[in-house]
Structures are given as C-alpha cells and as structure tokens.
Image (tube, rainbow, N blue to C red):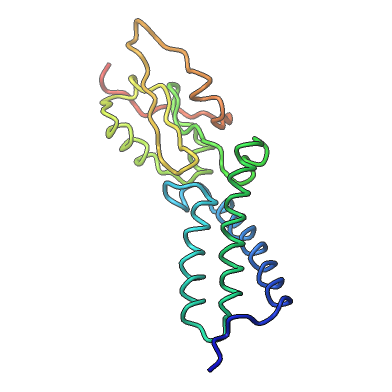
Length: 189
C-alpha cells in the first residue's frame, strides 16, 4: 500500500515555487478587481481563506498529491500570509501594493464622481449608507468613504453654526481625486 507521503525534494521545491507564484497572482487579481471584490476583509486575508480549504481537501482526498506536497503548500501560504502582514505593518509603500487605500466617494460639496465610477459604487448605495448611519440629509454628512475592506463609512458634519474641519487621522489616506460633482438636490432647505 502506497501512502504517497513524500515524492522527493524536487517536487517540494516546485510546490513551493507554485505557491509563491499563485499567491502573488491572486493578490494581483484581487487588487485589480477592486475593494468590493472581497467584501469586508483585507486582500491577503481573503487569499489565504480561499486557498487553504482546497489545499487541505486536495491533500486529503487526492491520491496524486503527496502529504509532504500539501504540507509544503499550506506552510508556504501561511508563511506568505505572515510575511505580507509583517511587511504591511513595516512599510506604507508595501501596504499600498497589497491593500487598496480608502476612497472619498462623497464630500460636503457633493459626489466625487471619478471615485464613484472607479470604485463601481452606485450613488443609491451611498445614499443608503447615509440613511443607515441615521442621516436624513446630506447637510449632516461631511464625507462618505469606501474603506479598504469594501465597507462604506459615513463621517458626520457638525451643526451648521459650528462646522468641523476634517481630521487628517480619519481622512489622511483617502484618495481625493478632483472632479467633484454636485450633491443631489436638497429638499430640506
């Protein structure tokens, strides 16, 4: 009875190389696909989740995959996950490669049309997020941001006689491209 536990060092090297290539390729595809492709988790976390299950299942169920190959691939992905997390916390440039920055979708002056189109978010979704945050009018909204996780955040403005200035800690990394459109008509004035 052949348990197919080990097929050789050459095979392990090939598995690890394929693991590296596939990991990078999947991250690239997800970055090109945009923030909304993954839901509410970081790109590299999503890659690990979708890869680990099939790796384990294939290793267990396939008679053509040696246990050592499956362990090597799984270890490779976990190591890459750790490395990407480590590098992301140490380098803003690297973090910018693997994680999309937040995007400003709406400001107190109106929709940022270029970002709305680029992020493939419908204005109705933005209006729904504003309503879900408890705002009846866009007058009470300073900004709407599509976060790196794909989640939409609402930043409230102050009452009109006490306006606030956007905090750089909150809006500092948000893409602020030009071509701001106009806000929807306001009926509460």
